[in-house]
Image (cartoon, rainbow, N blue to C red; front, side):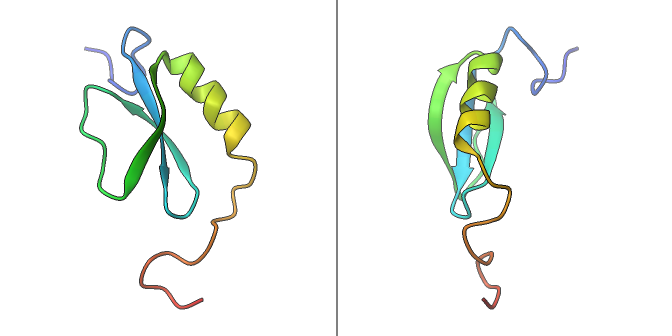
Length: 69
């Protein structure tokens, strides 16, 4: 059985959280709370390309919820 996060036959979405961090997520798995779909469904390669073009800084946009600035 292929890991759904590695399956090239599965469609994916690019997700983003409130800190501006991105994640690749299979459409076959419910997306986690706090993340919004910003691209897809599309191929794994297309979603990874979107993430690479969009996520230009690994620094979060601010402190995590509940953390002091």
